[in-house]
Structure formats: structure tokens, C-alpha cells
Length: 448
Image 1 (tube, one colour):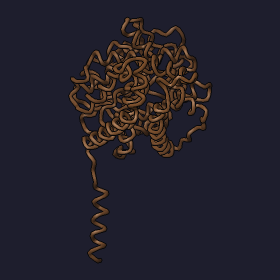
Image 2: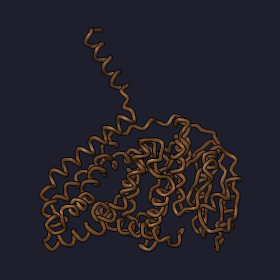
Image 3: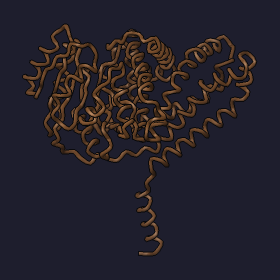
């Protein structure tokens, strides 16, 4: 073997062993994001000056920062982070660790049987305990669940909790959990046959300071109407991209109650699920505040029902917005022990500002542009679009691989995708603003 060939082999081995640390990925992504924002600022100077004629220079800067600078930076940070993401492979395929699944129910007579059926079809070697908590339902949720459990030979227990609220329902089951790991699952959510195996495998593969793993939640009723079709892309690309980004930096900000895995002792340590409209958000932030880490597993997939009416969509998303504010009140971002979590939770501090600017500046500016007044929305705003499209393309490629590994197919939903890219934020930002206002006014909480 010649010296040149030996050097080439050595070089190829070195390439395979190259490891980019979390800190290095964070710095690279931050640098690229700030670079993009700097270019945006330079290019937009004429735009700032022209808008300042009508609203003053400080207000002009404030508006354009919320419309272009910060969203452009965040998109660039996300794209670069996703390109650097290399999640370690799952180490375990045969797992015999027992787990408990908690399902909090309120009037889920129609959905609970299918949810339990998909649990019974799990390709998982460990014992699965199921606890259904009936949260003061006035239908036959308990009877249907009990009968289904017997028919499907599930190790199922029914509990009753009369105090309304998902957190009360889940906390009622804590003393009944006998396993090291516990999952939460929404009553209208169906598990892929490998979901439990993959999410538990991620927990077993992870370091000891990981206390929770968020699963991938996708849409099961995405063909029913346009609103559901748009949400299908939001879950598939938008929410998945955010969770991949957060998971990369070991600080997934929401181990969502719809489908996540937790260490039972960690839940008990923080006092169970908090009395909050976003109980899963606040719970996750408490974990992070204890210097624990929260991961995300793309291959642990569940399919949930999304709202098909604007009324229920508004209730859900305004509730999510309120949950974020609740979490910010409980644990301030600067008090989070991990620097990546400080950054990720800190980003939430500016979300109300961005939603307000989008709702009260960008959307009116779009109407003005339609009539030929390009004071707020003009050609310069298109500068953010290439990054947004690149981000969605990268996520699509990632998600396509996930579906391929799970023998799933991506449904054709072209019109839903176009609507999602062009118009979805016009719906989301105003609803989020209303959620912030509700939390500020301490309006009554609505679970469903």
C-alpha cells in the first residue's frame, strides 16, 4: 500500500470521526443568523427611511425589526441548526422495560376505543399499563374504555377525577404509577405501532440527565377540510422543525401531553402537573429549571385529531399562547441553568412583540400594498421568503426520511401547503394576540 493511499484512508477515517459539539453548532447557527440579519438591515435602509416619513424613525425601526429583522434571523438560525443536526441512532430495538400510559379523558366516548386499540397493537416487548382518568365526563367514556380494555386484553385501570382540568386528572394517577417511565397520551391520539418502542429507546439511549422525550405528533384528520389540511403541514413542518431545533440543543420546550415520555420520579420531584392552562409547557420548563434535559424523537410518531372549526382552533391556539406566558411567569429565561435553554426560552419573550407587529402592522400593510401603498409591505419583505422556503424544504426532506423508515407515505396536499406558506401566519398571530390578552385579563380557562 502506497503512502498516498494510507494518507487517504487516514483522512477518510478522520472525516467519519469529526464531531461538532453542541456549543459549536450553537455558535455557528448564531453567527449565520446574525450575518443574515446584518445583510437584511443594510439592504432595508431605504425601506426604513421611506416608512419613517409617515411614522417617525424609531417607530419605523420597531416595525421593520418585528416584520423582517428578527424573523429573518430566527429563520436563518433554524435553517443552519437543522443542517447541523445529526441525532444519534437509537441503540435498542428489543426493549422489555415496563411503562405506564396515562390518558386523561373528558367526554371521549367516541374516540377512546380506537386509542386503546392502537395501544394494543404496539410492537413492544415490555409490559404496558394503561390508566384512563375520567375527568367528570357526562357520557359513557369509562364504560367504553373498560369494555375495550377487556376485549383487547389490556392491563387497564379506570380512575375518576371530579375536579375539572387536565392537570387534576393526570395528578390523580401519580400514586397509581408503578413503573419507572410514564407516557401521556391524548384520548383522540393514535400511536404508530413502533411509537412506544422508539420513544423508550430514545430515553434509554440518552444521557442520565434527560428526564423526558417528546414524541412526534402528526395530523390524522388532514383530509376533512381546508383548516385541517393547513394544520397537517403545520404539524409536519412547522412544529416538527421547532422541536428538532430545540431537541438539537437539548432543550425541547414542550414535552406535549398529547404524546410524551417522562421519568416518573422527575414528575414527582417537581410536584406533578401544575395548575396551568398549558400544564405540559410549565411542567417541561420546571424540568429544564432543574438542569435536566428534554429530548425529541422524530421516529416516535402519533396521529391526533386537530380542530376542524375556527372556534375550536381559536380555543386551542389561544390556550397554547397563554401556556407560554404562564411558563415565562413561573421560570424566567435568565434563571434557566443551561445556556441553550436560556436562549430558547428567551426567544419566547419576543413572541408577543412579533405577533403584535404582524397583526397590527404587517397585515394592515399588506392591505395598503394591495392599493399601491408600499409603506410597510413591499419588495423588501420578500427577502425573508427564500429562507422560509429553504427551511420548509429541509424539514420536508427530514420528515420524508422519517416516513420512509416507518413505512408511511406523505399525503398529497398541495393546496394546503400553499395556504400554509402564504396565509397561515395571518390566522395564527391574531389568535395568539388574543391568547396573550386573555392571560393578561385572567380570563376563564377552557380545556377543550
